[in-house]
Length: 191
Image (cartoon, rainbow, N blue to C red; front, side):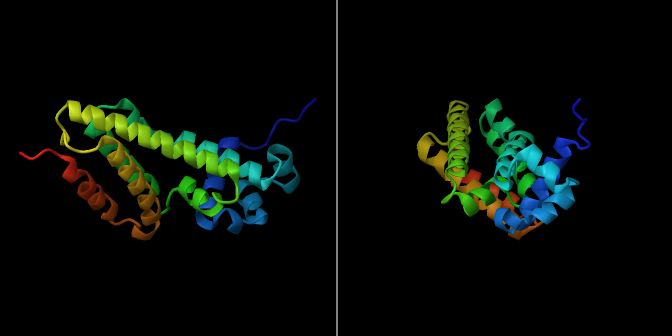
């Protein structure tokens, strides 16, 4: 009869997010991962197989439990309110910590095809959602009609990447909120 697991996978994944945010993939040593997640080494490898497979599971969890909260604003697609809601949620997520997904893409994206695919899917989804919200915002008269929607969506994606890094450096300041206003302000129509 199989033994019941003595751990909560959700809690393990949350602890792992903290470890990978603090140290990156290469800097996160197995001893700390094991200690912080309350696993023993044997149990860890039986459950996850390898540190790399574990990272993929952690990233999926991070996207589902953390990034999805920011994305939900864009997916409601009610124009500029959706974009502003995304940036507000994203700023709260990355403030003082950075974004785990962006950090890992930066660290491993050249060497790990799976990470590169995860990153490409994330950026494509983000750009498509921004474009849809900008189109809606144009219909509602919330943004200028002369902007190129596709390039503006790409520009907003690029800002998100910068926010992920600046979130670490800015800490708990209002820099990212001020930057969001500066980014979105010029999109508004002249009165």
